[in-house]
Image 1 (cartoon, one colour):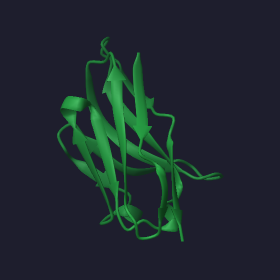
Image 2 (cartoon, one colour; image 1 turned 30 degrees about the vertical axis):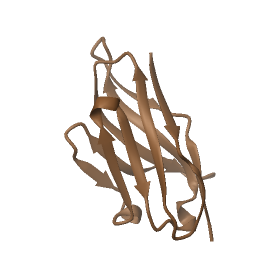
Image 3 (cartoon, one colour; image 1 turned 30 degrees about the horizontal axis):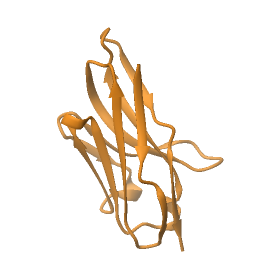
Length: 120
């Protein structure tokens, strides 16, 4: 069984910074990539940033230059450093792990989400 858990959300003023973390735990063979997605009520979940096991990253255009994703492979943990936050960044942030199970199936595991609120 695989668990993905986010932490570090909260309330911050516009222009401020926040770091959220996500750890994958349980029994699995390997992690291909981990990423952060966000969702606001009434809208689809969207990709914010993603990082592969080799360190390749991609970002949504709306966060480029402001957010940085990083990863600690030894801890199966991914971080999202968010700077110069804007009110439109307010959302529930979900962590995703694209991984290979012990039976060599490729699955996507999701966390329950952490709320980030940016006040103007």
